[in-house]
Amino acid sequence: MIVINFAIIPNLTRENAAQVTRRICSQLDRFSAEYTIDRAYREIFADTSAEFLEEEEMLRRCTALITVGGDGTIIHSAKKAALHAKPVLGINAGRLAFMAGLESHELDLLGKLISGDYEIDRRMMLKTVVSHDGTDINCGY
Image (cartoon, rainbow, N blue to C red):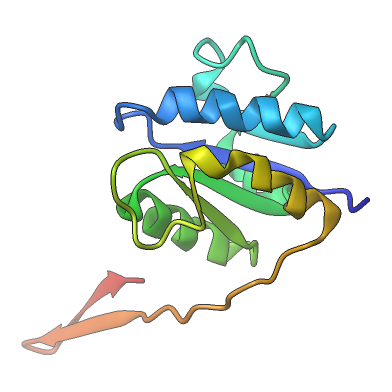
């Protein structure tokens, strides 16, 4: 079995994100996987086995990032993960997410991550800079 420490970043503005995150935690517990959640969410997820850390520390220590929300959440988290060269698994907590690797009803597939039965799909990120009147404006990734 491969040892993976997951950092879980939920978008709690999404209606089902807290519920889906708890289900993810339950699945990870089933597989004895280690996972962290941002310290700011300690009270919300106190009923889980998560270790609560500052986000930057989570990203530094994790093997992979699980993000819970929609496409915007996945893109936002991917920017953070890229700075630490960490892979991202997006889990859809809503109705539609084209970029999500899993839907909320597919959480039993998390076992494949732990067993190493997965492939990484590498995606390109573009950095944009707009020049206006001799001034460069960094538009980010």
